Length: 309
Image (cartoon, rainbow, N blue to C red; front, side, top):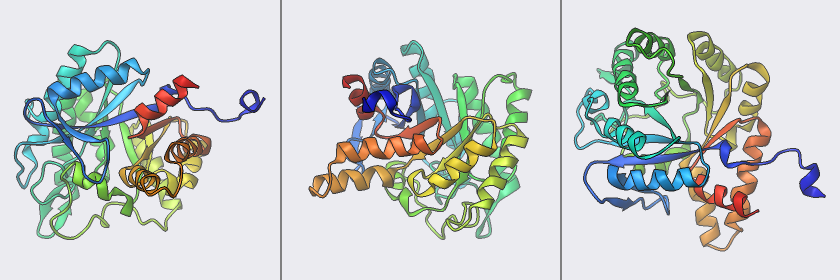
């Protein structure tokens, strides 16, 4: 009876599974702060994606760990870069799996910031040029959706124009519209090797105390042509997920981030809570708040649980 009257239900169709691509062959490197999450070479990622597809999960999102980094993050827009190679291999070896690509500079710069540094600050407008190049190379490789996560002002407009000018009018943009400067990103920075070498990201990521700013950021992205709008992190910002769902006619994406994943894993390991139940409750709460799509490291485990009933 409870199942029949439940207002919010989860489906494998709700999930996007994050993957970290690295150079080499037959590599599956564990990430210490994220149990059961790995840096994987392209050949291993292909097998992982085939498993993901078999579970009914519709999409993955790719993050790249390049062989080398420089001040301008040039590997981000190398047409034979790690993400570009991974996209081509996944599309060649899966049937219907959507490939979303993270568009940002932090994994590729030797300073770890999300843009081009001038003095001690990120140069917003100069960064836009590099993000546009990156998005176009992802589209050329076969990406189905590009997802800018940098939080530079105006980047959706610039990326949309660049995609259109290069014949990719039909490639959607999944914008990280409401991305907070959060403590919950810690494990991800180990996974993506993207921690800044100086300062922090407060000048371009949002203040956790601001709610109305999130609506303004999302509105600007929609006006610039975003096809999906995202809130990151998810659980500490359920109010923003609800706000976006109520105020915009775009699919709302929520990123259930590394810290949210890892703290459940850790608490379960210590015997302080039931990790499986906490996972399902957390994901359900994100969908209940209004998310149409959830990016989560729990995608495979949750999809299996849903399938098993």
